[in-house]
Amino acid sequence: MRDQAMVDERIVEVERPSGGGSGWIIAVVLLIALVVGVLFLTNMSNSSARKDNAIADAATSVSKAATKAGNAAEAAATKAAPSQ
Image (cartoon, rainbow, N blue to C red; front, side, top):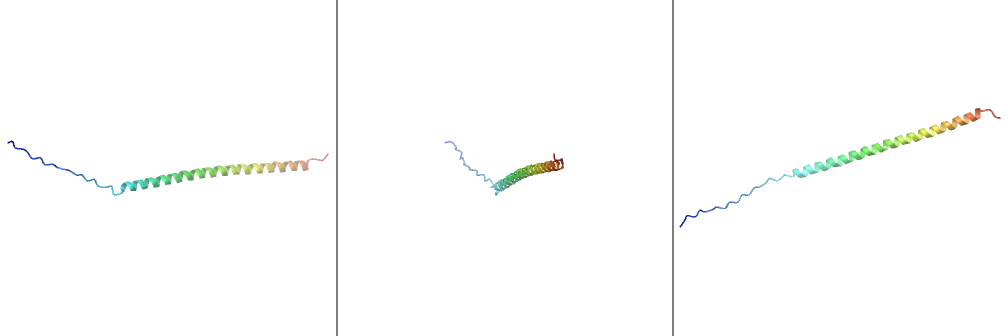
C-alpha cells in the first residue's frame, strides 16, 4: 500500500479591532460643524437683510424730509410774494 499523507485542516480567524466609537465621534463632529455653518450663513443673510432695510428706511426718511422742506419753501415764497 502506498503511504497516504495526512492533511491537517487549518482554520485561520482574523479579528479586527473595533473602531472604539471613533467613527461616531467623527460623525458627531461633522454634524456639529454643519449646524454651525448653517447658522453662520443664516445669520449673515439676516444681517444683510437688516442692512438693506435700514438703507431703505433712511432713504424714505430723506425723501420725506425733502418733501417737507420743499413745501416749507413754497409756503415761504407764497407769503413773501406781493399780493395783487
